[in-house]
Amino acid sequence: MVKKDRAVQRKKEQVKKLIEGAAMGLGFFVMIASLSYREEVAAVLDIVLGPLAEFVHPENFLITILILSVITGIYTSVIQKYTMNWELMAKSKEYQRQIRELQRELMEAKKEDNKHKLKKLEKKRAEVMRKQTQFSGEMMKQQFKPMAYIMIITLPIFMWMWQYANGNLSGISVVFPLIGVKELSEFFIIRLRIPYWLLWYIICSIPLTQLIRKTLGIRSGM
Image (spheres, one colour):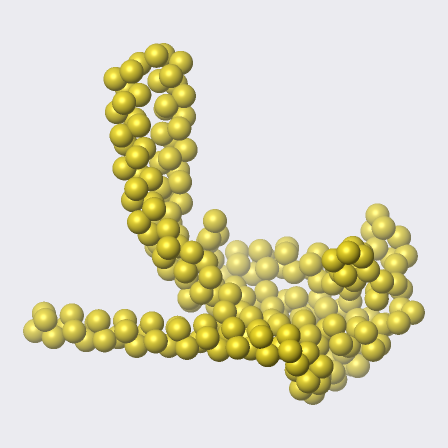
C-alpha cells in the first residue's frame, strides 16, 4: 500500500514537472514571438484594451496605465504565490541568517584571538554553506519559474502600451512632481529609450504590487 502511494505521488510529481516545463516553454515562445511580431500582438490586444483607453481618453492615459499596473500587480502576485516553493525560500533565508550570524561570531573570535573557537566556527560555516549550495540550483529555478508564466501576459500588454502611446500620445503633456511639465512620449532616459509614460508605470507598479502582495499574504522571496 505504501509503495503504491509512493508510485502515485511520483507520477503526480512527474506530471506536474511536465506541465511546468510546457508552460515555461510556452512563456519563452510568447516572449520571442511578441518581440518578433510586436505590431500584430498589439493589434490583437487592442481589441480588449483599446476600448478601455478610449473610455478613459488618451489625455488621461496615465489612468489607463494605473489600471494596468493594478492588473499586472494582481496576476504577478498570484502567480508567484502558487508557483514558488515558499518552504524552500524560507529555508534559504534561514541559511543566509545562519551565515550572517556565523560571520559575526567569527569576527568576535578573531578579535579575541580564540583559535579553537575560530576552527569550530569555520567548520560550522562550511557545513551551512555546503547545504545552501546543494539546493542553489533549485532556488534559481524557483525564482525563474514564475517569470515564464508572467511573461505570457505581461509582454503583450507592454507591446500594446508602446504601440498605443506611439499613435495617440503625441503632444500630450502632464506635470510630474519634481520634474515639471513633460510630454508623455518623450524619453526620460534617452539611451535606454524609456518614455515618461513608462516611468509612470514603474512609479505605480512598485508600491501597488507590494500592497497587493501584503494583502494576499505573500512573503518576500529575497
